[in-house]
Image (cartoon, rainbow, N blue to C red; front, side):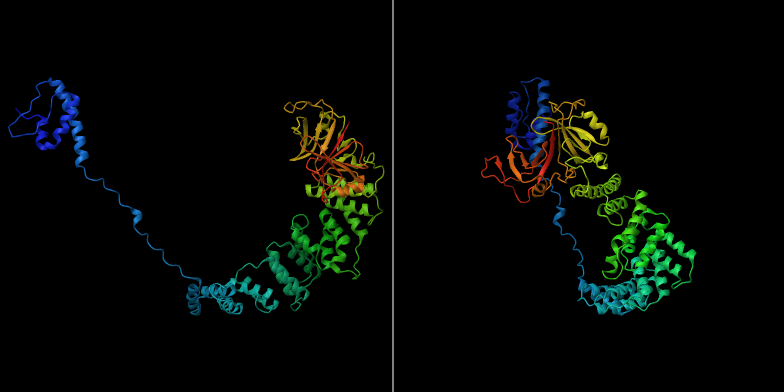
Length: 566
């Protein structure tokens, strides 16, 4: 009979028998393995059925091969650590000094690009001691071989006198070479050179060269140069007189001027050449261009003394300024409308008339941007504060354009929102405003009136629940504003300095801290009866627990102005 599997394994290694017998004893009672004392000894399983024996055999075989695999397996190979190998070395980069030395050799051998680079190295001190004289030497060598940027840089060096004596003639020559070599010279520099040659400033006067430089800049679409070129054709300076060409270049300049080119307007408005300044804007003004009319008004009103100097005989001409401002203002030009208001207010070029001034201020404000509106509203405040308008006493004159001022504070209203009005009525008179529910932190239900992202005013209409929708039928009992643009007829507004408010309403009588939320309120001796003015935590109190004082910080401000029906 063939040997059993157990006997087979026992012959392979007698050391495994105790282990196998232990496992066998766990499964059944019959030992499966004995140490072989001779080659003929057989092992039989006499106490088990064949089926049980086979079950043991399968289980033991699985356990045994797993055990042998673990016992005799070699160590798991560890992957080679790729990071342990040294990374290849990055080639060493040459220093600036080494690069300069190498480039210098190439430059001396006649390499034009190397000559340009060596020039820059000396010019800016890259790898060598800065030396503009040597830079010029190498730039000239490169320029002689057609390096256009070297010519351009030489032009800058001589134009501004950078390390060499300033020489506009040499600068012009180098700029011209750069232009011929295909490099675009900045238009403003070309215009500057043209002006120098036209006037003979720092260079010999040469109208033909002036025209040449103006033409270069004009071809780049530079409005100022186009205008100067139009004048050269109109007057026949440096070029044959040609009215058609003059008009052609004038129209091109106008397309870049007045409305769309602040640089052109600045140059021409502030030009030291009076005739050119006046000629530029007068042409447009006579053609009906509102912006040109406004600029011409500026020249006559403001710039005469500043351009030509006091005592030069060039006095400002307010009459002409008023004339041109009025033409532009009637076409809806906002700045002209404001300037016209200023002239009526101060009596320049026209008899002083505060009501007319406010009328033009208001027309300007209707279409002005936010910044301009602040300027205009400040002028309106000052006009009323100076007592130039009658029937003040905290309210605007009946029928005055100021009645429509949405930021005027009186004893009964702020702007068009009046005490006693329904919330829905305010919504109708301020169609551009947004109305949002808010609260004061004490549980009162309020309505914030917003223009854009800014809160114009806050309304209280006796509503009880801050979480409830706005009750549009409710009547306004209190209006408060924190907007510094809101103002009384005397010019008092949120964030006014207390010392300035005292000039209007008398001395501060008392600063009081409320028990709830520690809010500060300030009373002035002669403030309007229905005003409640909140201060911006400015009080100087004798103790931490004190609630009343008459002392305040020197730079103290008021925070808000409220009016109440109570």
